Length: 121
Image (cartoon, rainbow, N blue to C red; front, side, top):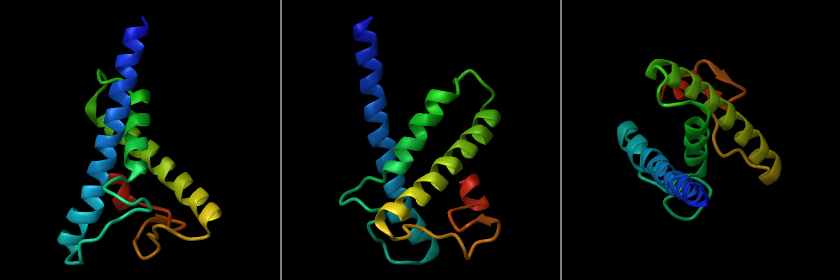
């Protein structure tokens, strides 16, 4: 029993870092290249890691079984990810007195913290 828990824990930790790295690739390389901007290190950490992506992925994996319909998992996962993004934005702004991202210029945003485009991406 302890072996199974340790194995699952290891998978979750490794998955967290993989998703955090993929998020860094997305925000630091793919988005800037797609929009014609300069490639940059996105996020508040030094290094190729954006923890909000890892956290969101782990929470979604923990909440929704793989056996469900993929379209339902997409919608539910997007809602959970937006909720996490909104809370993270709010608390980081309170802790660091800075805004790490701002979607105010985008249509269908909520207080500049989340937006409809981000929901689908």
